[in-house]
Image (cartoon, rainbow, N blue to C red; front, side, top):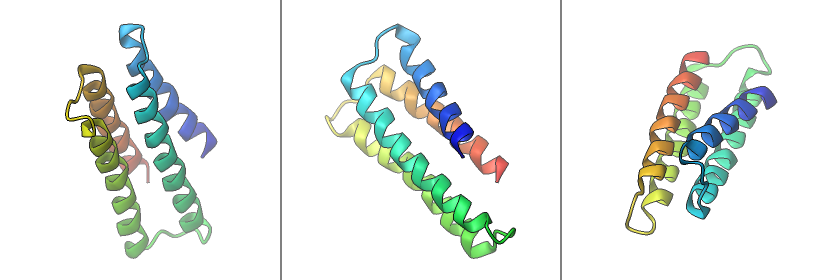
Length: 104
């Protein structure tokens, strides 16, 4: 879990630093994303303890991944404007979530 969350954090930072400046809005967005990513991996670890992730657990994991993206979008829109930098983070997050889903 720690390796996965660090890789996600590093990727989000890489995206945010693309313009060489990390704004307060980007920091808040990344912090929120990471809070939800940690929660996702906590749930995943719990589900994997018995060695099998059943269909109900898969649905819960899907819902958690969806929550990560939806809350990030909501937060980015909170000030009625999604900046180019926030948009780039959201697109990167979409790719990250797709990668997480493939790895389940």
